[in-house]
Length: 255
Image 1 (tube, rainbow, N blue to C red):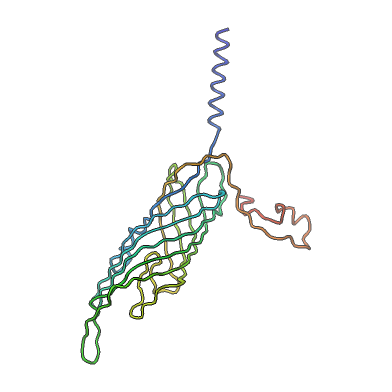
Image 2: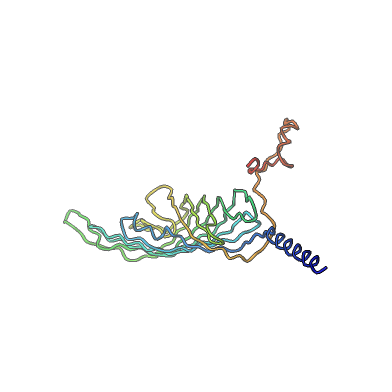
């Protein structure tokens, strides 16, 4: 009798362990990270350019990630005919949309597109400006002046979970200047957060490391993003049968 009870107890323990091993949870929460590419800027810039940027996002209904970014930047470019300085703060608000399918509850990797609105408040000045006129060389300067700028961004990027709750990712951004303070004497060379103003459409690449705080716990896997469209009146039933109800096609179908 004792052996039988012991055997049953062992079976129950094994069964409970097996059930708990099969039980899976999905953890979600706010993610905070740093843009590591800020530390690589001096290697790709003629002047001394450095700064920092903190990024954060939080999941909303599975595939949406409201995002905030804030940073500071300094630029010091000393040439033979001028010495240009600028520094300031900037911030961006936006949202990212995950367009990849989550394969399991443990899958946290993102492939996303997003938009941003950016604002920067900065100062610029120029000293030891040397130019020539009829009377010879002239040395002048432009005093420090506060300025501001607004712009929009279109973002494409990825974030992958390297270790539990630790992510590495990158983004490629196209930036579209909207409004900025007009300085009649000198156009800003670099606007913090926006970048160089020499091109028509500034582009930027970021590389981030971030940590996700696992605050929320769920067993629900976010549904893949669908693209909707009205049924064509002349389409037959066989053609429409491969689409979900409402004329929507699952982008992840067949993966």
